Image (cartoon, rainbow, N blue to C red):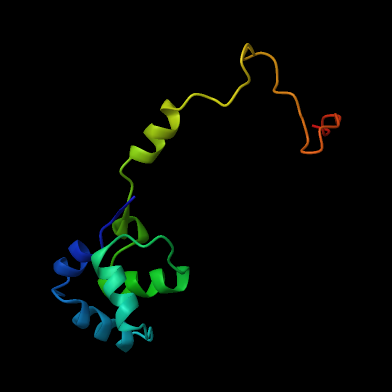
Length: 109
């Protein structure tokens, strides 16, 4: 994912994090200067849905405008080999071996 906050803010005429923080406060979202700096300068690892809603309201956009998929994570995940045991075919399911080493039955489907 690519975090597109600065571009959407620029489109709304907001050029500095302090301006954005002021607009968010006017909309009812009081955030610290440190959190605003983090949101402004890099992609957040997490964001509260309530905060995202206020950001979108202030910038007159949708979450899809702020969180732009790049496709690189999905492509990297698709290229990784599956974690099957050596010599196992794709038709046979992986054996279920609990941490204690005792065999267990498969759960019901």
